[in-house]
Image 1 (cartoon, one colour):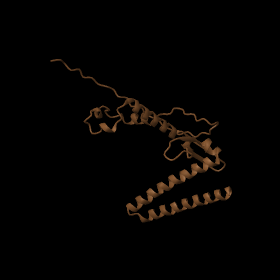
Image 2 (spheres, rainbow, N blue to C red):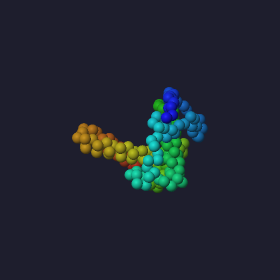
Image 3 (cartoon, one colour):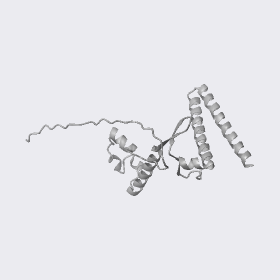
Image 4 (cartoon, helix red, strand yellow):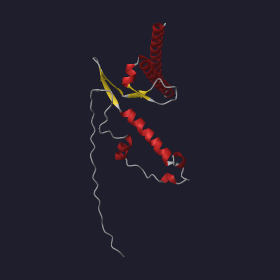
Length: 187
C-alpha cells in the first residue's frame, strides 16, 4: 500500500478596491480606462459553476443554451457591446448643476423595434433628436409609473397607487403642453 502525502495548498485572497471619478469631457470621444466587464467582475466574486452539466442532450437546461459556437460567440459579443455602451457615462457641467447621463442613448429616430445608439453630442446638436429622446424618456418613466401603480394596487397600497396616478397625469400634461407648443411654432 502506497503512502499518501499530506499536501496543503495556500489560498491568497486579493482585496479589491473600487472608487469613483468625476471628470469633465474635452472633445467628443469617450475614454475608457481600466474598464472591467460585468462578466469579469462576477467571476471574481463568484467563480462560474460547472459549465458542462447542461451539455448532455437529456439535461433539463440543455435547450436553454446556444450550442452553435459561432452563433453563441456573436450573441456574446453583442451582449458585451451593449454592456460597454451602457457603462460609458459622461458628466455635463452647467451653470446650475451636474448631470450624470449615459454617453450613448437609444436612437429615438429609429423605427420601433430597431436597435441603435446615438451619442449625447448628437442628441444635443439637433432639436428634433433631442425632443424625440426626451419624449422617449418620458414614455419609459410613464411605463415605470404604470408598473408601480399596478404593483401598489396588487399589494393593497391604494395611497401609493394614487400617487403614481398623479405623477402619470403630470407627465401626460407636460407632454401635451410640449406638443401643443411645437404645433404652434410649426403653424
